[in-house]
Image 1 (spheres, rainbow, N blue to C red):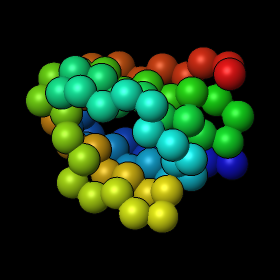
Image 2: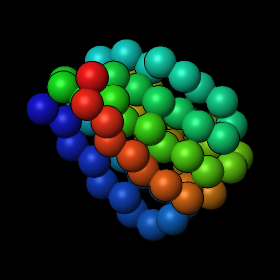
Image 3: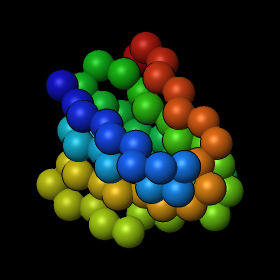
Image 4: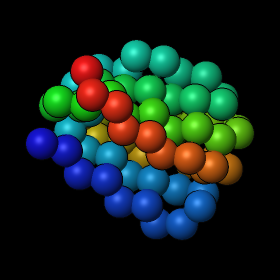
Amino acid sequence: MFYLEMENEKSIYISGCKEIKKFTEDNISMLMSDVMLSVSGSNLCTTSYSNGEMYISGDILRIEFSAI
């Protein structure tokens, strides 16, 4: 199970991340419990990542979920 909270178009909190699969300034993709979560935008960065919890900041344009 995972939790996602989007505070505004510039900040998102994610809990339950199992593994980061891709990390660029345009896209951060991560493996969650049973889905792949992808955050797309520009100037993306993590301000914190620990114990499966992540804060992402930047210009967030899209959040996608896909089955694994």
